[in-house]
Length: 178
Image 1 (cartoon, rainbow, N blue to C red):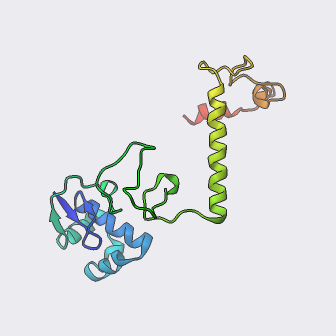
Image 2 (cartoon, one colour; image 1 turned 135 degrees about the vertical axis):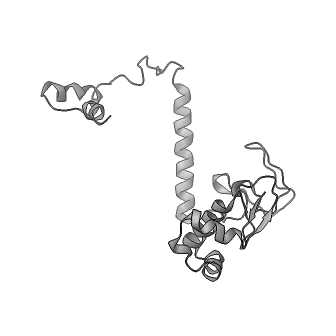
Image 3 (cartoon, helix red, strand yellow; image 1 turned 30 degrees about the vertical axis):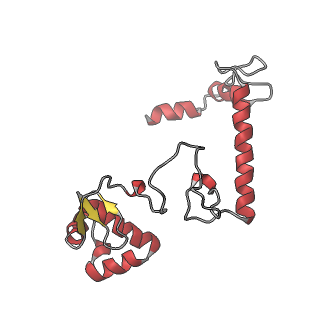
């Protein structure tokens, strides 16, 4: 059992989740959720979820849901089944384009600067993954050095200089904080 949001019908596990859902939507979007709360619980902004929950649950429809998590509800009008990563298909919908970031419908594709930034990030990620694949299993690089070993011109080996001068290193500071 759970509650259906009286505004958008989203399933909520209990009255606390319903209160959080309504308030968050009202604060973030300022949409119909805010209007509904203003009409039915005018003091909602001053209440916490434990206080608001009983007020809004009395006004919401109690229902039985298979799964009562917002992130498990298909709001795309899909066919109710998923596919493994990289196994999507379009169900013969000719105008549906693949969505960036693995999204599925409802959001606009990126364009302009955003598309260029996304493509650059995608390219850099491919390079990074390819570089990781060239390293050995045990942390050795192709040149025989370990990834953690200081290299010529690398400041990582200079950490002992601070100790030699009696100064605190970052490691000393971390130990004192714990």
